Image 1 (cartoon, chains in turn brown, red):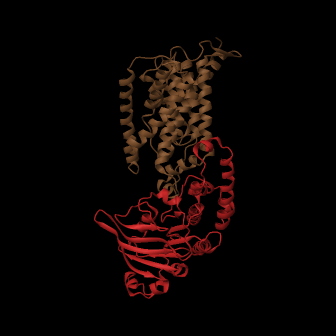
Image 2 (cartoon, chains in turn red, yellow):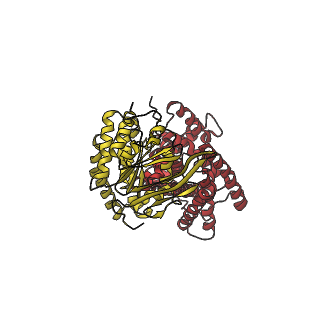
Image 3 (cartoon, helix red, strand yellow):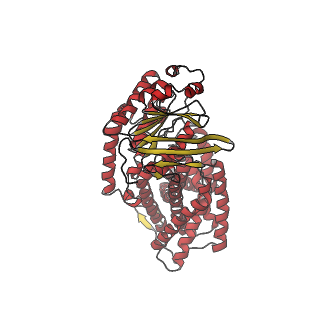
Length: 297
Length: 271
């Protein structure tokens, strides 16, 4: 493979996987945006969704339908999580809520291992044709291509939701000043429940798609950690930032794998996004589009 | 809540409200009535419980005893967002704007309850949703921005605006609900003389103009403005109600003069 070829192949693969990261990152940002909570259970949300999809798929349900079922279950679980664990924490310090999400991540992880075990499972029969798609000189695995398309479609739907419905603004308002928002007729509980539901759904689809690429086991929840560099890059509360960040992290990760692995053999592909995040934070602590805090003297 | 209250009839009644935080009684047995169409002021020294009273009316606090009756119905159990939906709007003593958003977005949020579009049709942005958006935009542009004379700052980020303008934007946001009862918690605090005059004029406009006719509850320290604007006044001191009546009655009430310690002439309280 020529150098140019390798470059473009790496770029394309990175972009395709980045689409999935962007979707999960968006779910993450939504929770942060409306409640200021860093959701450290995001990775577990992705595997729950993925396993639900897999289970229904194995039962013979078509993949698309299985994803829809997983979306519905994600919606219900998101609302339940908010109601059962987080509702009573409204008004408590943010750090408390963040610690609860750590607890939730252990709880969900345990639950997943309990229900589905720890063996790697694959989607059998394969959902996407094994034959790669050729576009010009680029050869792309169809699973990558379809994952990317799915992720982008969902991203567009979510972005439109925030751009054109009153709830986008209401969520942002709740994050900014909850007391004022509820005094204007915004139901904070509804906003939080909706945010968790959306996060669960986005993560579930992301997990299902990634499970198709690498097979599904508990380590897919690593995705939940990977969204951190993505959202840090874009700015913690920026929706376009999450998308650009997700794509960028996908690309960076694959370039690191293709070009740096020969010099630093081992897991450079895995750690590169985090190294990048640390360096990036030194220069742009608010990310590309995050709100800078305005202090008036 | 369908019934219409005519001008001069009781719109809100606060009935024997008690509220304490731990052992500190912030309100002990406060009662007063706000009639439709009037400006009703709540005055009292710092720490008298005025803001606590306002928070009870708009639902941020729930009194331990006593009732809040709005349009003849007990609204004790309603949450703040539900009270906003039945027409109670407010501003805050310490500005509570969404400081990272533009002026326009802040005011648009005040329209939240008037946008009935569900999540699904809203997400698809079809038919009703876009029509609704146009109507709301017209309301904001023609009614609120015009009234408050904030056209020049509509696209500015609120956090960057001077204090006086922020106060005005907060009033605009509260008005966007198209409320029937507007709680103004110290709308004049921290404003310069010119800004005070403007704000007082806006409050009068909102109260008197045929388009608005909003009943106001005004919490304020500026006695000059309070006596000029108000139709009736309630005086609180250490959580207790010490007087209730017309501005003239209040000014000649010895209890009130005593509470304001030496402020023999209530008109000179502005520093």
